[in-house]
Image (cartoon, rainbow over all chains, first blue to last red; front, side, top):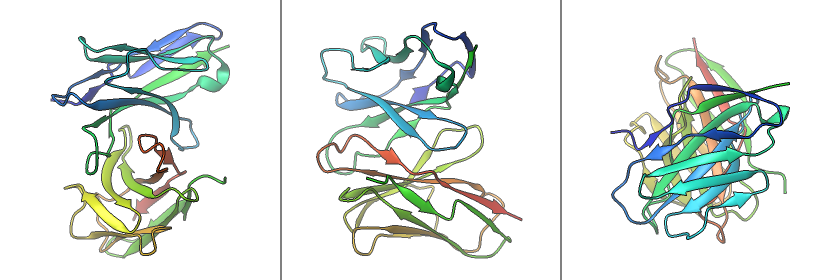
Length: 117
Length: 114
């Protein structure tokens, strides 16, 4: 089974609208972390936001928020007031366990977001 | 703080040749990671170092691949006898002691095998 599933290969959103990018995950480890990265056409992966499995509140970073629904094993990224510069590939990733030897990230296949002026 | 840098940005080689990529992490980041990203996929973990110690290697890292971080600063990834399945973007990331869960990526090295 896929550990990270992103079901939206591509999305088109009007500028200034909010957008939700879906991510579901699969793990049996009670301790894990969920991440979102942005990859513009230049290729560099840009860290956006992190949510730990024990965090009580949803993570927020500026216009980014992570809608964490633990029972559903979903970690959707919400971008408010989208901008043209938000056009990029977005990857959801997970780190399982804690401590040494549990630091690798497992990525989904990504969602290509295009913001329309 | 100049970010993670990788060299070269693009490498074209003939099948069967050896190639070596370099990664310079963010200063004072003690953890360094290598990932491989093929077209249309997310990055896949290859290996990671804490200081100079290589603590984990993926099964993707065949015998033709070797990574080093001799002084706990920069790292090299070598691929021997390149094959048709090796073309990809090779990404390096580093993370600091205080926020080990955050990995900061470099621009990557794109490998083309002719």
